[in-house]
Image (cartoon, rainbow, N blue to C red; front, side):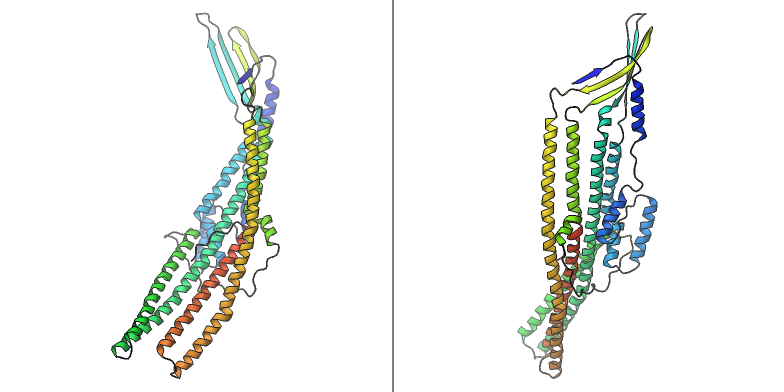
Amino acid sequence: MNIFFKPFAGSGPGALAVCAAAVLSGCASFSTDGGFGKVAELTQERTGQRAVWQRSPADVDAAQARIGELLSQPLTADSAVELALLNNRGLQASFAELGIAESEQVRAGRLANPSFRFGRLRGGGGGGITEIERSIVFDVLGLLTMPLARQVEQGRFEQAQYQAAFDAVGIAADARRAFFGAVAARDLVGYFEQVWQAADASSELARRMLRAGNFSKLAQMRQQAFEADATAQLARARHQAVAARERLTRLLGLSGDAPDFKLPERLPDLPEAPLQSQNAEQAAIDRRLDVLMAKRSTVATAQALGLTKATRFVNVLHAGYANKSQTHEPRQNGYEIELELPLFDFGSARSTRAEAVYMQSLHRTAAVAVNARSEVRESYAAYRTAWALAKHYRDEVLPLKKRISDENLLRYNGMLIGVFELLADARDQVASVTGYVEALRDHWIAETDLRTALAGRSPAPKELP
């Protein structure tokens, strides 16, 4: 129900005009960087690289120039992250949410446009009376609740900043994982080719010896089976190398028209000592973006609840200047107030809903914190296991296989073993090397997961085999 009060006496519009002028003079405005400075800072703290939002042609040109520099050299894990933050189109699209959130924040700091009303009535007959009504109406309730509304939208804008940094950290972690996966997959192809070459040589020698009558059919078929298995392993390894490279290509935002990137010859060496866990769980609670986002969401919900309570009984209140003129009569001036009376809806439904949303947000924040602590513990355990396994391969397995290979070579030179035993030993040694490469890859991916779990977000599920 709307009630209109229309006193037409005095000069009431003066105070209203002053009030409107004061509001309009303090209108909110857009920031120079769209709030992206905080996003870049949060991203750099957690990845070591700054995110870049390409908002203008100059930004695009600068980004393309830097992309060309990065592609002219073999990639590293850090340069792959920088390239993804510069060039990933999905990430650039997510940054546009900042502009949307800032627009809502600015809109909340500006008074709604006034409305103009005009009415004309004319009596019948030749000497009829013409009556004209004019009024300008302002949203007074919007003016009264503007500080709280701006506070709510400011919270949502900050939430959008955290979300943009959250997306950037996720892309950075995915790019780092994909880089290690692509380097390892390309490296493994070379070792599987060595296995296939040894198996092929062994199979060919077995066929010749069978034709010469110096080899049994069963022994020859065993060598042929080794070659068939090695061929299948090589085909799978080549496909994995292509898939891993394409996964990295997608994350880097490169297309067929862009220059191709170069991968290093091998993975980085294993660190001599693992990372130590010092207050890891508390660090995750203090710095993880998903935890900060959940906390900020709860605060914003509480602020929105305050706005709901403030407008519970009165949610429509307009006031404005009005005048009325009539034929042969002096013009009447005054003001007009439009007020919604809570006769049927007392606002309890909106208030109850807001309180339920707040409790929902509170419990979700607690759940995110619990999950963060657990994920840090799990990620650290996986990292220590991966580091220990890679170290075991490097310090124990590979040296042992090398000594066995040297001993077999001596025995072959002394004609104590045959060529097939020597080739089989070569295949076993290469298999141990591939195991070390996979363990080293898993270590670097586990370290990426740990760093992400500590300061960024929940680690993504592993896509690598």
